[in-house]
Every structure is written in structure tokens, then in C-alpha cells.
Image (tube, rainbow, N blue to C red; front, side, top):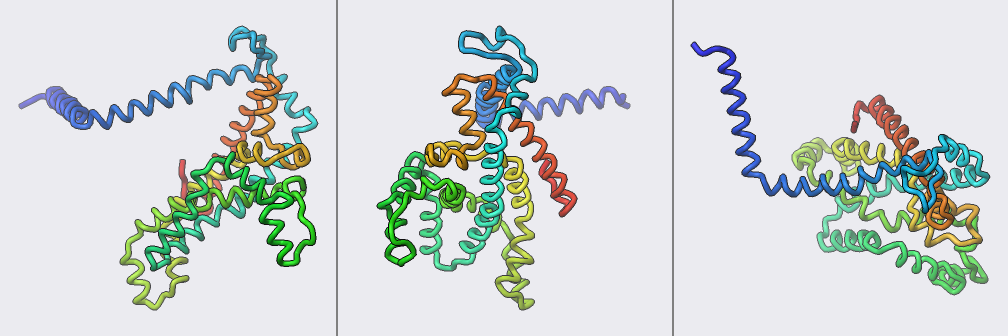
Amino acid sequence: MKKKGSKREEGGIKKVSKLKSDLKKQKWLHIFVLMGVIWMIIFSYIPMGGIVISFKNYRVIDTIWSAPWVGLENFRDIFMDDMFLPIMKNTIGISVIGLVIGFPLPIIFALMLNELTNVKMKKFSQTISYLPHFLSWVVLGGMMINWLGETGIFNDIMQNFGIAETGKVWLADKTKFWGIAISSGLWKELGWNSIIYLAAIAGIDPGLYEAARIDGAGKLQQIWHITLPSIKGIVVLFLVLSVSNVLNVNWEQMLVLQNPLTLETSEVLDTYVYKMGLINGRFSFATAIGLFKSLVAFVLLITANKVTKKLNDTSIL
């Protein structure tokens, strides 16, 4: 009889040989994965060492390690800054309102596209809705500035319908900036954000709809009892990620659309970091704000995940 030790050794040899065989067969896949891992290490993990300057008084003439330590002084300066509360108000306000309005819209849009039976109309609607995503905010911002200018198309429409007698520069009105930023962001990303929901809907078993139709369920009942429960996992995933991303407002959009007349309502954390860090040279202060944002995002991610798990027993972590 063979000993147990020898059986284990044979099993281990078989596992090693199988692993070598699999690696040989899938070598190109592993090479591609390795390239991605190397890219992530170089551009995502190694630069994280620069976070240390948030605890230092870093200047251009210093190296990261030679700069003097100041402890939590930069974080104290953040909370003592007179601009901190207005900027947090703008950041959270634009993000939360955009989340409340913008999160369900791609789902609704995907449901509507899924119900279209005309293939040509469906493809046309998808193409038109996806197009703005592929344009930079420099291009879209220029379009928005022209459309919302004194002689822009928006004023022409309002004057033709008798809503307004004279034109105005809408982007110069600080009370309208939040609405313009949120609506333009939805316009740009609505179609693109609906793609993942369309893919999830396409994976639902058609037999479920056949059974529901036989039982007399209408379109709305099928959507409510079949479609939405089937894509619940992906909806929860995007909701949790969106909640954790609440302090991140598209800085390119804000930078393009804002002007000196609207800074009171358009200055957000991302644009403030850009101005403090790259323009004013306060690198340590800007890095401290970035670290603060990351910590808040981590807390929100864990909290949102726990809340969704308790509500519907679905977790993404």
C-alpha cells in the first residue's frame, strides 16, 4: 500500500503540472493581464507615496522626503479656510441633486429603449444618446456657452414663445448655475450610463416574460416583477459607487462653465484643488484635500454597502 505522504506528493505534482499546462495554454491572456497589473502599479500605486506631502510643507525646491513635517497643519487649514463651507455646500449640493435626478434616469431610459420594437428607431435613439459622451467638455462647454449666451438659441426660443422679452447671459447668473451644471451633465452621460443596464436586461431569460404574458401580466407588470428584480444587483452596485463618489464633481465641466460671476455657486472641491495646487503652488494643502476626499469616499462606500445589504440583502463588497 502507498503511504499517505506519497499520495499527497503525487497530488501536488499533478496540480503543479496542471498549473504549468494551463499557463502555457493561456500565456497570451496572462501577458495581457500582467501588462494591466504593471500599468496599475506604475500609475496608481507608486504615486500614492506622494500622499505623504499632505503632512509636510512641500515646495517645488524640495523633494518629497526632504520637505519638513508639519503634521496635521494642512488639514487644520482646510477646515479653518473661509472657503471650505461654501465649497462643500456647492460640491454636495450639485452631487446629491445630480444623483437623485440622474441615477434613475439611465435605468428608465434603458427600459424605454428595451421596449422599442422598431430596430432602426432603437439604434438611432441609442446613437443620438451616446454621442455627447464622446465629446470633451471643452467642446460641449463651448456649445453651452453659445446656446446660453445673450444671442443664443435658448434665448431665441424663450423670446419666440413669449416667455422672455429680452435675452440674458444664463451662465452669468449664479442662481442658475447648479441647474445648468446638473442638466448638462445628465445630457452628456445619460445614454452612456444606460448601456450597462441594457446589457443586464438583454441577459434576462425570455421565458420569464412568456410565462408572465400567459398569466396575463401587462408591460408595466413585467417590468416591475421581472426586469427590475433581475437587474437589482447591477443597480445596487452603481448606487453604492455613486454614493461613495459624492464629493467628486466633474472638474472639467465646472472649470469650463464657471466664471468670476458664478464662483460663489460654481466653486467645488475639485476646481479648488486645481487652483490651490497647480496655480497657487500650495501642493501640500491640495494633497490634504484630496486625501480628505478619499477618506470620506471610503466611509461612504462602506456605509452605503451596509445599508443596501440590510435593506435587500445585496452586497457588492
